[in-house]
Image 1 (cartoon, rainbow, N blue to C red):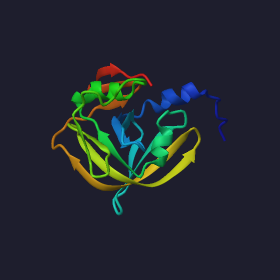
Image 2: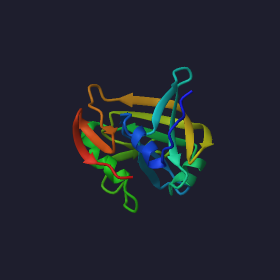
Image 3: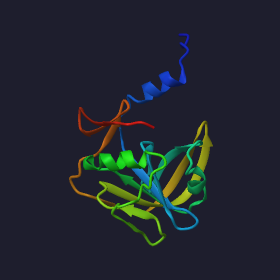
Length: 171
């Protein structure tokens, strides 16, 4: 049996960064009806029947209590041309919805125009694991833009075109 070498959390983070993912924005409305959203790259499908997806949020995120209390949210898979939007929603302390083209759905959840795909979800379950909360949502409605090019995240950078960095991503 091989002994495993020790590694730091930074080593772990860099190794995880070698897994390319899409870039998404999750939105909801707070108890007063104000739009809330943030950029994430931790999004996966869970099941086709019923249609379930999951995403995770760090326990230090300021918006965690809002997402823990909400009953509905939307996950927006970003298109290649939405890299500036991804950066805006990853930035703390800015009005992320100022001047943005969005409309509330029937539950008041902000739906952002131009995303490659949108999944409107009801909260189904959540699990606290390590330093994150994993949210499982049941998809009530989804839509997508035919032929949209995805915005990708790999190794700490966003890519609008395979192999060509779009912008450094800081989180």
